[in-house]
Length: 160
Image (cartoon, rainbow, N blue to C red; front, side, top):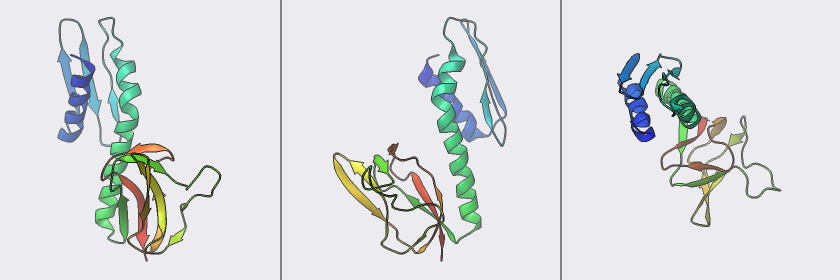
């Protein structure tokens, strides 16, 4: 079983909401456990490959991000005043226009429709992302200078 297959298995376990999956092969055994709050990977190493280190280093951030996004989506559904601003494109997310300038917005800032929230660089073009609503910035979901995917949540705004 290669790393890609293990990653796909972890995604499947997370989506299927099962508590534990065990797989045994000739050269290794792997146990994937999850609960409602955290997801832990506990492989048993019987070969020269240290699966636990590979999986934890590559999956810990994405699992935590997925849990955070799921929690925010559930909260957004419960409170219609909370709006999630999503990325309209793939690129690199920047919170300020240049390294020597101030951030476009910070948590707690009041914004108006049309205010610039961030910049996403795609193919050497810097695209300003403007707010569609007026409100208060509750959360910034992406670190500065991080890659973002299409439709990835960027900000949570409380509509005023």
